[in-house]
Length: 177
Image (cartoon, rainbow, N blue to C red; front, side, top):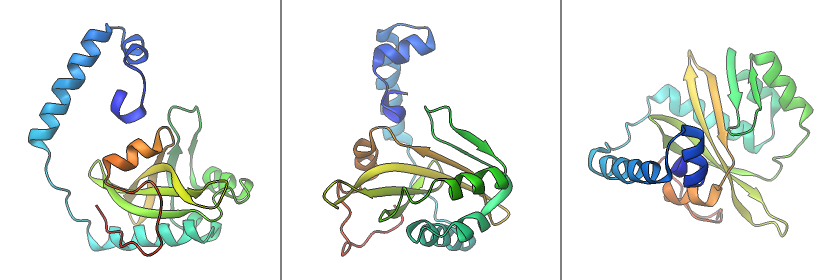
């Protein structure tokens, strides 16, 4: 919770019903374990690459019809730690249509996360520079998005973990990391 959601050690200890010392000790051990056992990302199968490219294009073009076409009938979407959770294509499509254009001008960069696809979201700041906004992890089933989980807390820290810059640069070459 500390590294993923950015919770403080005391908050994490409270949630888990343990001490701050236990939380920080467990985190240190986990970091060592990950550093020694982390496997390189598995390349995506060609169909997932195509789906991810379609998702990125639909998102950047604010194309709700194309986005809705990628949604699985039983799919879910969430934004932890917020209590926002939707299930089913109809509810997700309705939310996309009702939102207006909050992501206008945003850009996405494909990345690997937890053995699946994800996109790093860059959104314009008050002067138009594209800055880290969030990270959406996407799971696919039968050629459609079965789950999308968007993490909005501490985006700069997440982007750093993925080796992404703190500002989107159009001329940069972004590859699936």
